Length: 112
Image 1 (cartoon, rainbow, N blue to C red):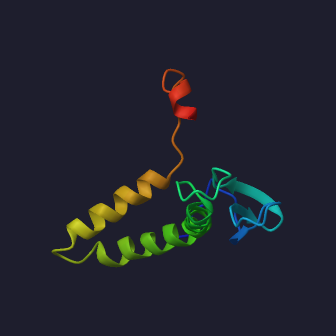
Image 2 (image 1 turned 90 degrees about the vertical axis):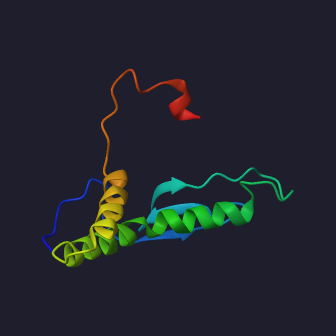
């Protein structure tokens, strides 16, 4: 598999806790990449503490999941009868690729 330059932050992503000891920060080395939203209450309604931690873990795994999915596509593409597998994998990979938004697409609802 040929190594491609990625637009996202290189390196190992991990989950860290915020000031309230909630594991909702995604970081690479000491640089924050993302934060998983937490509603600030422990009322069981999402996004609660557990949901925020699960979302952060999924975000932190994204680069590894992307690489694994690319490997699956590369290995299964030449095999007959697996078009449904490679098609679904390619769609997921495309969803992870950076998208250029047109000025019209960048509306308030996109930021909610």
